[in-house]
Image (cartoon, rainbow, N blue to C red; front, side, top):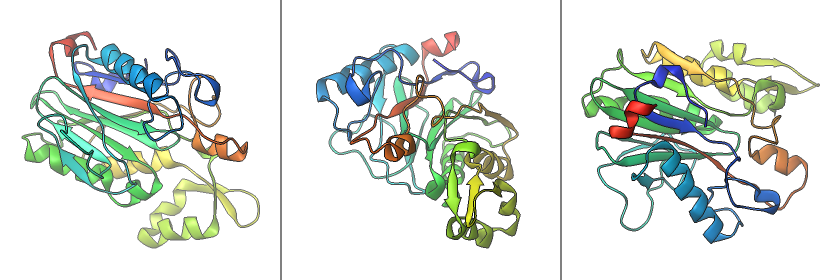
Length: 254
C-alpha cells in the first residue's frame, strides 16, 4: 500500500501487484476486468484491494477510454460502467477506483467539504483536461480548489517513456511551454515526463498541495504492471493496478 501525505485523513491507497492471487504474466494483484486473466482471480483481487483501503466499501470503477470526462457518483453503477476517466463523490462507503498500467493515477480530496475524486491521466486524458474536469466536478459538490489536495501515483517515468517528434509537437502546439516536459533522446525522439506534466496541469488549476510519488511502473517489474514493458517484450497481455480513495469511518486510519 502506497499512501501520500497530502491525502492524510482520507482513506486512500495506490496498490501495485503485491498481495494478489493471479498467476503467470498477470501474477499478483491484477484488477483488470479487461485483461485475459481468470475472472475469479480478478474479482478476488479487486475485493482485497477495496478491503485494504476502505473495508466494507462498494468499489466503483469506470470503462476507461483515455478521455477528459468525469462522472459524479452517488451509488454503485447498476449495469454498465460509464465510459469516462474520472469520478468524484461526496457519499461515504464508496471506493473510487482508477486502473493503470503506466498512465498516471491521480487522487484528490477536500477533507473539509467531504469530497473525493480519482482520475486516470494517460497522455490523452492529461492533455484533454481530465484533471481539470475532476476539480470542476468536485467543486460542484462543495469542494474548493484552494482546499483540494492531490497525489499522483505510480506511472511511467521520463527515463522510460520515449516518444516521437509528432507526439512532442502535439503538446508544444497546445502550449509552447510544454517543451520543458521533453528531454532529448535518439534522433527523432524524446523522453516525456508525464508525471511532471500532470503536476503542472493540476497546479495551473489552482491546487497547491500536490504530491508526486516518483515511482516508475516500467522500471519496477516486481512492484508494478506496465503496458509498455509487456509490449516491448512481446507478451500477450498485462495486468492493471488500482488506485483507490473513499469516504468513511476508516478514513481516520489513513
